[in-house]
Length: 97
Image 1 (spheres, rainbow, N blue to C red):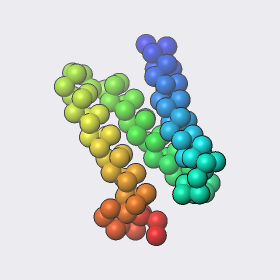
Image 2: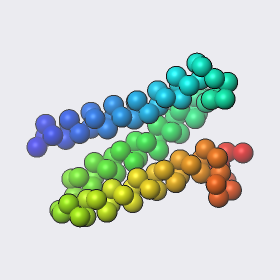
Image 3: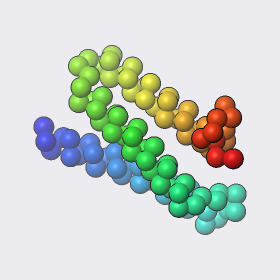
């Protein structure tokens, strides 16, 4: 069991790293992508919260149906918060500008 948790955490951290590499690579090719250090930190925190929440669901949810429901909610909320922070679809204070 302990080995599975370590493997899952490794996969989650690898996916977070890969996602954070995308804007870093994009900044090398386009002036349209302009992230600061704080952007990477905030995105990393958001992705870590989503990733750890996903791990918690796998650990605690007892049925496949529960897992799918909780995973869908976590991913939807994570993407919604990411979109709000990126472009301000709701005009909330976390929109950045």
